[in-house]
Length: 417
Image (tube, rainbow, N blue to C red):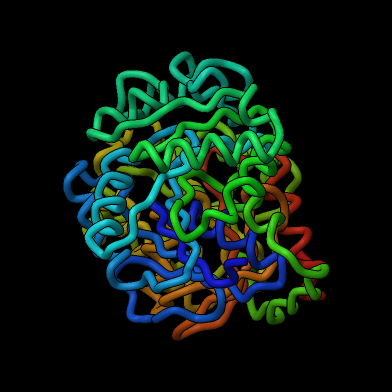
């Protein structure tokens, strides 16, 4: 069975979501990102291509380049995509398959974006969110790249030939499911789009497809990564090492406009569990020229230096142009740089936000330790500083997620909030 894995992701939180699944099985897993100087460490490397907002051609080219740089023979390959199809998953997969085949490895993509633990399922070949068709949700209305959430149609938009594997096939027994995958390989299909309405569906898919690891790659989110890791042989994983003791307060950065992240931030304020310092999006657009910049930066840095957990939400972000996401994340990293040098730990929603700040601080990776709850991995930074860090995809979680995560971090490090 495969022990070494490469995960190519379109954002940092997704890379960490997938990597932590293997860390739970006792494998040494790290996250790195595009442009970072750090190399592979351990059994599992998850690389953030930072491609979510790139146009299709550039997104695909970046994934192909990362594959050529990091992929090794006899290594399992997961292409992480957003569970709600944001970004350019089809173009990235097409480029990845082309690079694999150029290297002499014919491959079938097992496409399974479902993550039932977070409300993402696939039925009839279409993605659903909390039981609703994805196309009817505010998330789709705000940020989508395709005409529909029909996976076969999405893949066809990048020239990929795919077949839908319905729930009846997924639940028809591992032998029948393995035979369906073998048939797709024999026909030379590019991909199979797999239904999954519950965790058991992904588990069955993982068990049936793992023996084909030299001929398939898996395409999905943290759900398929967890299923693959669970299907690996071995005893129970050893306890993860504890993160280092906090030397300052936790910096909680909410750069996401997703409803789940905003609700979790509001709950933190309601519980009086963190000092609140709001950053208007207009300040980030203006940069250091804004007269509020220096005072905000100093206030946040002083708060974490004094040992206070400090919540920094970006306000009026719903009015921000989503195409400016990278520029706003870079500006926020500049504003928080002083606080980053004094913080005891970081909790960040949104991969761009976390990556921009950590890169600014000389961090090139994260050694993953444990999953606080679905979609919230905990690790320790690698590079110029070593501090605990937790990341959360913007749309994941409940209004209690950040509060519970901080409680867990303080329990692990033996510190009080």
